[in-house]
Length: 235
Image (cartoon, rainbow, N blue to C red; front, side, top):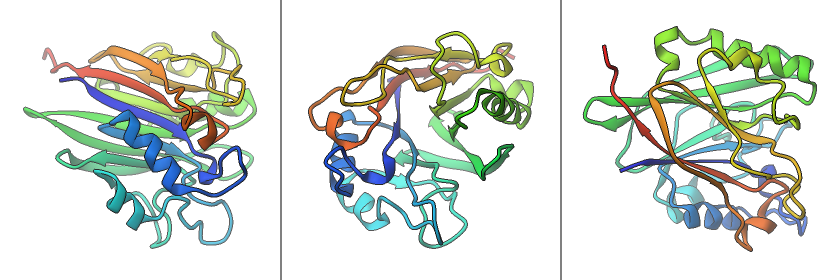
């Protein structure tokens, strides 16, 4: 069966009604039935960075678990990036990737077992507003991986890139960038800011943008979904 990955900038669970509503975000995720979730703006930016989605709610209202990426007891991620995974999947490894920027930013990495000895490496990122820094950040992500590792890696998140062609050059040799559709602003989507880049052993099965009534209210971004098959290493 394909593995479904969902990427979603949840804007700290504040919807278009300007209300903090983590239950609504979890309802949107449940609608999509994901195996893996990559979140951006999952923690607040100031102070100890408390989680916008409380741990107890995630455990009570979904079948998802939180990858161990936080560096304190109040966050669920790092620099706002978090990764959730369905019960039954196994986290093999986690890592944090420092990203160059004018402001503190980082990416998160989780290797998840998918069965039969196979695994997928998932990297979640929320890239900078300026293209010159986004390119440096994508290069840092690419350089964190060996050439072999890139083959079964998926990079997902808010790439903050308005162009449909430019800005992805650091990934072009070993990744294919997928733009599922327009995701921002959720009230009238114009920008394809949320994207997925995948390596050679990842086969896309289907991709899309969630456009339910609930998703259009939950954040200023719409969530994207990516169904994939992870092929074994031919070597």
